Length: 275
Image (cartoon, rainbow, N blue to C red; front, top):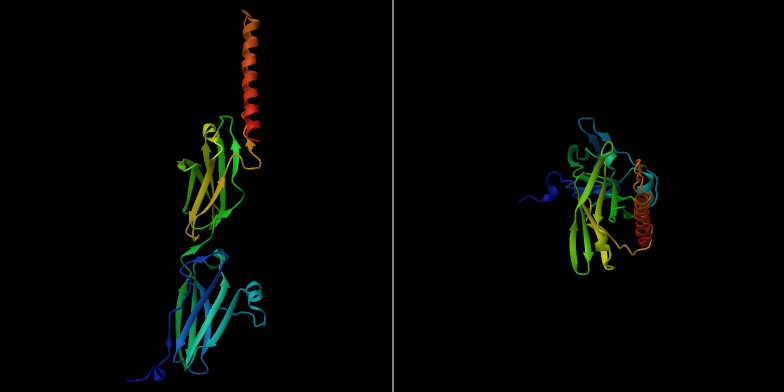
């Protein structure tokens, strides 16, 4: 039987998060066993087939929070018990800066060098709600709700609109327009319509839920037509052409104008009802 304390030194795999999310802290941890006293640890980063680049953090002694804000990386080496040595690399993950990057932890102990690799994948960026979900009143009498989410990666995202009336819940059809921003992130605009008849029920609410791989759980917003706030009125421009023939009938013309005016008044009343 040979004791582990007298064997050759061993470097364990780098431990890190299962997925990396833009703007969140990442801690990579690597530990070596059976290390001599003067063990040296070097962290490197490599993109594609480029030469690995040594990570050189600042040597200033600052608080932990300030270090993450003031430096790109922070390295902390510690001796873990007898002949064990650990090293931590901390940084804020950036999709633009770190996507496709491989981190290397290199241990040198007793003239022997070993290294382990950690690849930045899978990577994500969380969707950001640009503004509150806004309703718009259409001339048809429908209410148009729109949701905009920006800055997410990858492109796959699920958006569900539902109409909730008491204990009844109905899925609404929606239309999504996806836009890719160079080089990595996406945005989406989702729209759903609800009829005027449904909105006559004061308990009616519209709920939108979105889910993305970067999120621990789905997020949602719920709106009611009775909620305070601005309702945008979408008007349609009409052009009326009146042709008067030689068989002029003033009563018919008057009735036509009255009908047109009455329809415009109805549209104004519809808008006032939802202000």
